[in-house]
Length: 177
Picture 1 (cartoon, rainbow, N blue to C red):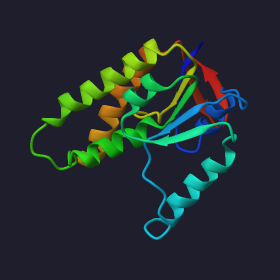
Picture 2: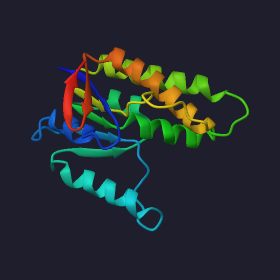
Picture 3: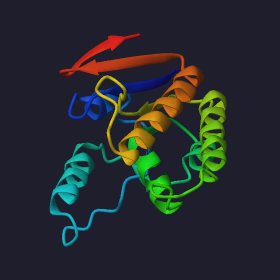
């Protein structure tokens, strides 16, 4: 049993690499917190989702959810989570946190992150999680950009600590940290 966090920049090959770490013949549970594909609302997003779905082996079961910790804990077998950046975005959207005057949602995010890290640590099968690497560029002049980078950085640290291995993808090439 191995627990791996795969990180890297946008279009670095993270998802494809993460998928290759799983046994294509095994009944993998693929947890995705992304927005449902709606071509009428966002054709480009729908095309991305469709491309991801086409790559998945037939034995894999896709679960679209924000309840990553609960679904991971309930899964009976290997799990792939793609992606923590999308999870954070959807959580912040659902809590209307982007423009909130207070930071009351921060404790909810800490609880969600702790629960996910615990679920990763205790899962008795392989777990691979995908995330985006943040913080290698300028600090955003916009609050939303700073909010995202700061909190995804914290999530990545917590989940990285719960994993046996962290792999950084750069230009499609893996670097085990």
